[in-house]
Length: 273
Image (cartoon, rainbow, N blue to C red; front, side, top):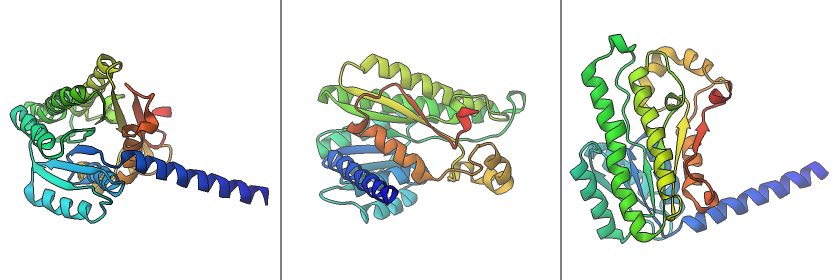
């Protein structure tokens, strides 16, 4: 009976915590790059369902507009959902996007820099320079462009929360993935250093390092190599986008008010090995 009561109390406490998180997020404005699919869309859905106005960005208008309709269907309160077609590798376009968000909604409280690509599996001596350059343009310079504009806007407000998508490849060597790993190591460096730069100015900047997640970015590898990918993780399975979205949601919220410069592993135990 005592165990049953304890479980009931814990369950009630969890519900209160979730409700508190949602109240704290209401009436805020968030940008999610690469928000039309995978982890980005899962984050946008969770934010919108909590009353946050969400702007998602991506390269493809058809995919973005479809995602906008899906996210709008779960939005609560006065939350609005917008899609802006945007290529994060274009600094001018990124600046214009942030300016448009501020013009439309008056502020930018949160940003999830999720846009990224993984274009090849090869050792360095077998890799393609153009494909590596493409990954640098999106994964590193794209993140840099976004952070530059987001931080500038958030400093003008005196507060803001940013979460960057790193990877287990940003914390470890990955066989046949050196070029991608190099870009994600850069994400970790940009995240931690920027967090230190602005820790006393009301900004929190963190990252998540997902393990292998069931998204389009690794769909080909899942189809051909699922058992091996699962075996990489002590939990013996792949992650789901919602599991990463939950971690990002917490980092964005004021529940993580004393957390900055942190890379949160959401990897089924990979990093503990």
